[in-house]
Image (cartoon, rainbow, N blue to C red):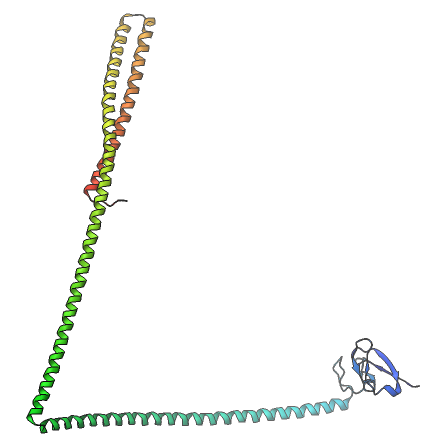
Length: 313
């Protein structure tokens, strides 16, 4: 039994089969590629030495041709293909030029037809306008002739009808003017009512504002009176304290001029106490005076705001 050796065209694995099975399709055990063993007899590339198929004209690894005959045949085939490609390009360019010229001619014809159509439409419109004007003139002429040929009674009736129509138009215009005047008066009345309502609302708001100011002044007035009353009492206390201080000072001065220093201690203490009491009363009086002044300023501000009709905040 003869053995046929071959290589896988996909992965290059060396395989074997029986001679009778070389024309059947087999599958490579490594890459699972399917091929016919008889078509895969291998030969070495004369340039790189790697195994390639025997029927190959060019090495798949280095790209060189296997023999000179194959190189000449491929070169001749390439030149023929180049010639045919050049010829096809020239023919295609000529076809594009012919199509362009044909399209330009069609476009010029289309523009000429369009201009002719527009001119025909313009002439038709002018003709239609002239015919309409002629018909109107003819109708006016016929109406004048009919009026001239009509009997006097019919002319009088036509004149009366025209006068009645003119009177109706004048009456309609008068009614329209009257309606417009009524609408204007109604708008003015509504505007006056709106202004009156606004003035009344402003007056009510002003009254409420003045009443609020009066309430605030009424609330501040008793406080001012009380502060002034306390100031009067405190003024009397201050006068008495100042008198006591002055009396203590005089006693101290008289005692210091004729007594020993040891006898001055009680008088000095009495004078210091009177002075401290006077300062305390004076401080309280000043505080009451500042409080009363502040209340007076608040009342003055409220009265000024009331006089100037200020708006509430």
